[in-house]
Amino acid sequence: MSAEGKFLVYCLETYKAAKNMTGKQVIELFMRYGVTDYIMSCYEALHTTGVDYIIEDIDLFVEARQMT
Image 1 (cartoon, rainbow, N blue to C red):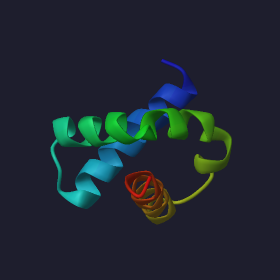
Image 2 (cartoon, rainbow, N blue to C red):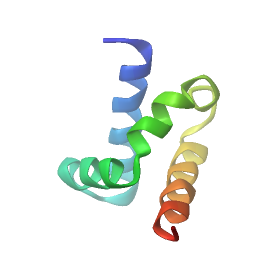
Image 3 (tube, rainbow, N blue to C red):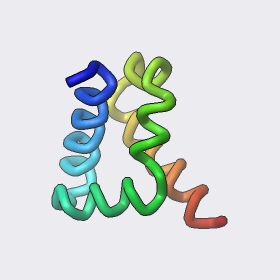
Image 4 (cartoon, rainbow, N blue to C red):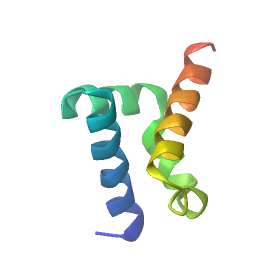
């Protein structure tokens, strides 16, 4: 698995734990709002940040997508 793929799994698992969601719920959320593509495309910047930033960034990304 690529470094980007491993990071995506890390983000999914971290988000799942932080939001007390199931894996299925997180996958559905990520797919519905394009979070997976976002994480993969922003890997270079995101993988250098901390857990709190990643969770907040995903929340902001989803929130912005919900408004459109």
